Amino acid sequence: MNCIIVDDEAAARMIVSHLCSQVDNLTVIEEFSNALQAMKFLNKNDVDLIFLDIHMPDFTGFDFIETLKNPPKIVLTTSNKNFAIEAFEYDCIVDYLVKPISLPRFLKAAQKVESFQISSAQPNVATSASRSEESTEKEMYINIDRRLIKIEFDKIYLIEAKGDYILVKTEDKNYTVHSTLKKIEEKLPDSLFLKVHRSYIINIKKIIDIEDNSVLIARDVIPISRSNRPELMKRLNLL
Amino acid sequence: MEQPNLNYIKELAAGDEGFERKLIEVVQKELPVEIEEYLANLNNAAYLLAAENVHKLKHKLGILGLEKGYAIAIEYETQLREGNADLKNTFQSILNACTNFISGL
Image (cartoon, rainbow over all chains, first blue to last red):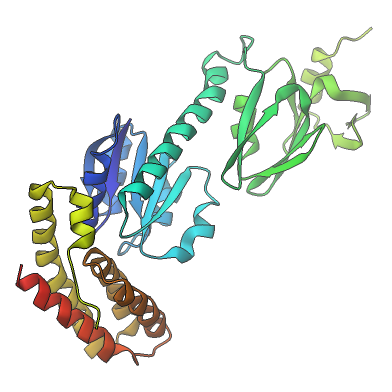
């Protein structure tokens, strides 16, 4: 796993770099004293992980994250504990280290990163298998309050977009996740799921009935947009 | 009064004397610059900027093993953000202790 360190303080970069050297399979490929340099680097290079200082002059760590289209995993490093809540509003943020960082705490963060790599790799398998081919994945993992929760695809009724969050309704429970409909759509198997409206993806096996421009799933009546209706009708086993 | 020490640095280095030396050198180089910037902002009553400087200095206090000093820095940073510099003398004595300590290494 390769990583970069972004921190305006040389001592902080040196400490993180030294801590990284204590972890197998974690290589620091570059260090940056400001976010702008790091952004330029990331435009041309792939990294697995960023150790990112929140408190930098001109451009905060959060500003930096907002500029990244596909952010890698990020471990925040800061001298301020008060940013923790804000930090976990970002899916890409795996952990939050308060300076000065100790080796045991750093190792714990490294373990977290590794487990996130594994969990996020599973849905990616489904994506790379191409949505036209049938995925062998039967479940996905979602990040709720720093816990990875397994959800079986066939237990999901529907997914609803709610601003910066999505609501995943399942047979057992509903989950609110900080993500987008587009992002989860890429992880779901084509054979089961269909986007029927800009705010809804449904499990077509869970449809109870369809009436005009709405579909009944469990107890929810979901609108079907005009543009999505033909695809839905095509997918149904009509008599 | 709590005294600066090398406990954190030595624990981190775990016997790696090269790393220990380099980290001390970086602290010796960065700390005076950060203090100078902080004092300039404080003297200009630019409290928000001074708070930013204290935020940075806080990490150095942690590196130099000052747990109480770190806690004072947190409080002082908050005060400065509210336009209050009541803790400036207390903080200055912590900075002085750090300066004396690193110059003697």
